[in-house]
Image (cartoon, rainbow, N blue to C red; front, side, top):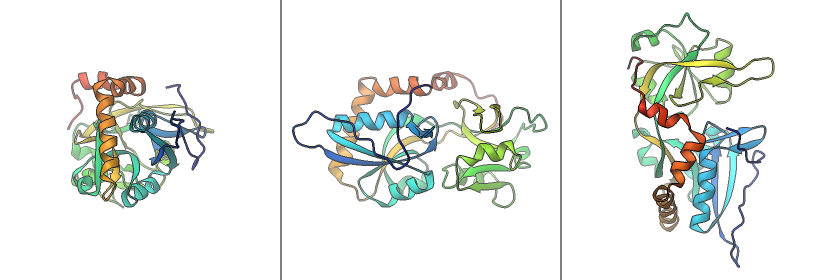
Length: 263
């Protein structure tokens, strides 16, 4: 992925629209660590959802104001502040009644991953996975599923408030496994003093739901309608499919592959 969009944390993106009068504003918040949807790299926000949000605003005749925040702060604002577009969220039963949903943007297929060099970790079934420590980000939609499968805080589940720290803690052996989608790049990027390292999937957790944009309950019905119509247009004319191919090249490959890891 080489395409980047400049954005300092908290800065605003305001695409210009050819209108005589100023366009109405669409405020949006994005968690800064959700690869490949919306994430900061070298102070720049990029991803499939960033480009899609710009496209939805343009088609709806709105001026996009996008703020990048740590995921937990973006989530809280998108949950409680009407008329603010939040992305990108997994749609799950515990969240269903909390938001108005726009999507899906992409399917969901979440697995547990380990460091490839950790040959000591051999998992063939769920019971074996419970012997290891799993690290997960605060408010991640996978937490209820992990708890349902027998993982528990202070035993074999550790919740991190900083999503970006997950890879670092995995390298250091703070925990053994992390949840990621099957079509992720399967690596930890290089950090100061740490080389790039490969990961590999070991256990499928869920294919429930998908990835969506949201508005808070109580948002303007007209705004919701305009955004849903704009999204429907991107699906009908192939724009969303093009963005998926651009940002998630492994998605179609993963969709065609059989699930070979234990369920």
